Length: 276
Image (cartoon, rainbow, N blue to C red):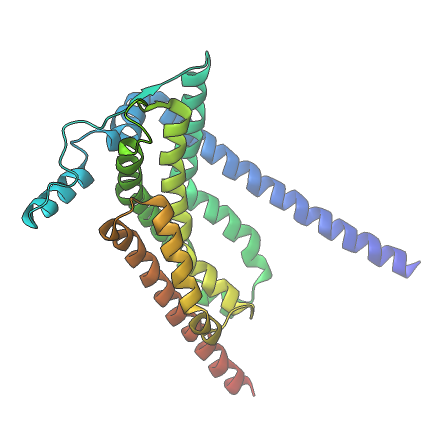
């Protein structure tokens, strides 16, 4: 009889956790919807200035690269118009693009609050010293995410668009890109940049739970560098300068992650000696 009571208590406890998680997810979703609604309302700014910004010659990245190339005696990235048009070939294409772009913008803007809800769900299960050591998690993770989004938008996106719009298998083929394909590229570059820049945070928690060590990261540094180079070669034009521009920040993040992992291990060793 006592075992049945204990099982019921455990089951209720588990259900309570599920109920709490459900409300955290609901509040996070509502935050995304609120910010997504704002993005939906300001569609002129979202589309004309942000989404279609990287297809204009006046985009800051192109201007900077053009001036840098001219200084070195080249004319790369100096153009008046990119050789492609954007079209919508389905009845609901533009409306669908408007909806999904608004949701993506809502997620990016609501990211700090989503992290806050995640932290509220996880933190009660942590010890007091673990909560203190993770203080500032939301701020640092949000800052890295926004920096990554900006990197993806201002660096990876224009390099990719410039290369793909100028690439031709034959002069007989003109580039008419579908609206969903173009927006998908911009969205993928921005979000992937944000997620990649979360690497130090991910390494911090993986080290805390013992899945990663500084020695492990150093051992596989060469393999990580090769993977980074392959990724940068895929998402950037086939020239060394563009690949270096994308590769350097990711390599720096990897080295920072090694330093963070080392600091976590060192801190854990100090605590174990103090307790011993």
